[in-house]
Image (cartoon, rainbow, N blue to C red; front, top):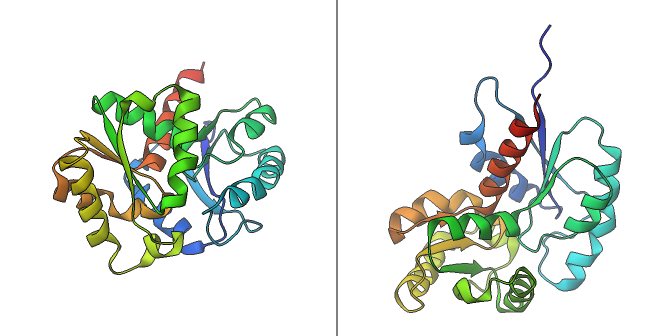
Length: 222
């Protein structure tokens, strides 16, 4: 009897099920026969949207407890562009834990000299820039511009894609970004039409993180 496929758990750390469903749909193209199982789940204790530093801090220990309690997953993806609890969760397990912001940025660097980020709001940008500063990559950032929407609106709002195209064009034409990262997991369903509209690579950071998890699990096999 063959061993079961490895399992990647993708955790939406907010409590909005629409965001989780959008993630699950966006990851469908990464599911294939005999490939890793991809399971998307929602952190019930999380706020409805992670939009402030306080929201980020509030989910750190619930994420750590979730990782420690899960004995069936082989890798974890924290699906929030602030990478809440990433290092705390890594301390709690020997299994790989990926943050979508870190993975999204690394993927963008492989596709372009300078990248732009579409943020949900202006107040998210300072938090994202602090993270890039820690990574030592601020010189590769062409710019970051906000939608001025909530997480819930990015996941289900009717005007979201139109606004993303407008902001993406500003990043491309005014900031000279050569690739664009969608700076919220709730934007996942818009990657393909946004890339078609902009004509440059658009990175869904959750897809990027799951792809890196694939590689980590594949190379860890005997």
